[in-house]
Image (cartoon, rainbow, N blue to C red; front, side, top):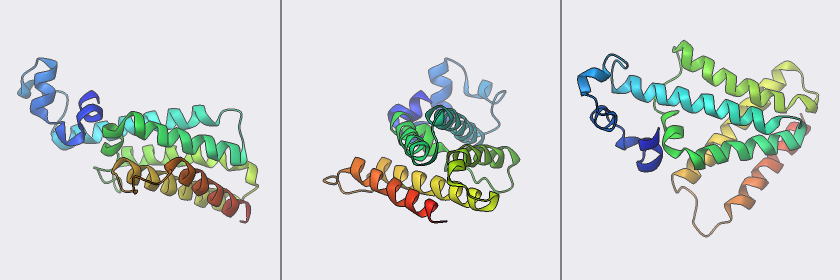
Length: 171
């Protein structure tokens, strides 16, 4: 995690991890099967931390306030752990029960944020998936310098949340 966050996910290699731990690279294979397994494990860890942050941010809040707090918590996680967050995109989830479960937990927490909007179960899931997509997309672009530097990204993110909350209220 430390290497990924300080130097980027591409700096994480089995050789680097072994060296930093003072172990031989073959010794790592007792703990991870391959480089892909290591990156997958980092992605799982990133989602675990994301769920904790989202849950903590939403405690005692509902509706727009919960959505706003969770959005800022998501963005904060990406700022604090850019490499770890990047690992969440490296392994395909489809067909991987553990990764699918991790994504489901993220959606479930976001679903709690929209309870106050009086949506039926299906609409609530769609709203939670929309939040996930919007928060991830914005944070991904921000982390990868995908936004022009002279833009006020805090204002843009607040507008994104306002637009989404209006849309959810209209459902």
